[in-house]
Amino acid sequence: MSHNHNEEEWIVLVDEDGQEYRYSLERALEVEDKKYVILIPETQENEAEEEAHVFRVETDENDEEILVDVEDEELEKIQELLEEESLDGDFLDDDEDEDFLDDEDEDFEKDEDRE
Image: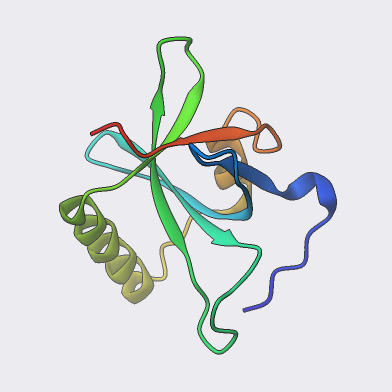
């Protein structure tokens, strides 16, 4: 699956070393009252197989949304949900994905230290 984007459609994540990574929002979903996003990196390591990253959306002490790495258990639950939806054909509309995040054009800081 190919993703073509305008400059303003990218989500830029910055790691703790200040390195920037550009992603497109593939999907937003909620599992057990937690919000998650599935992001597709701009640079794919293997063009034959699309890479995706899953993050949990949390709010920091400044009431700003941050993206946090998910635990293996969370990833398994998300994968189960996606498999069920693919069997049922029950996917979110693109409009619902866009409404999920307040402003997807804003830079998010990736917080790998949070548990």
